[in-house]
Image (cartoon, rainbow, N blue to C red):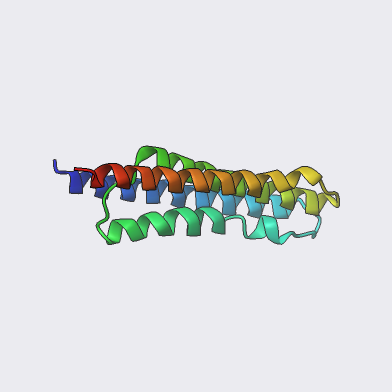
Length: 133
């Protein structure tokens, strides 16, 4: 099996996982909305968009572009960044629906941003390593 075949499997498999996460987030938000007594939060309602746009669409685009596989450390850091954003959005929605707030919610986008920087650094480091003869 060639490297190109492995990239297809890697990107397609990741896109499927992110699509399942998207469905899970949508289902969770739908069920939570049933018990929220008519109170809604955009953070909860649109939580599904984070794994959809940041994960499934990105991986599907890489698959369709026949891109090389991303480094494992980069993929994992990106997945953790999306996870932090998704959990932060979920908690923000829960707090909105409950009518309360927390100053600690700012930590989620900050951590996600740091993890995204780590993912980018790992991608650059891997690219630089491949360029050196």
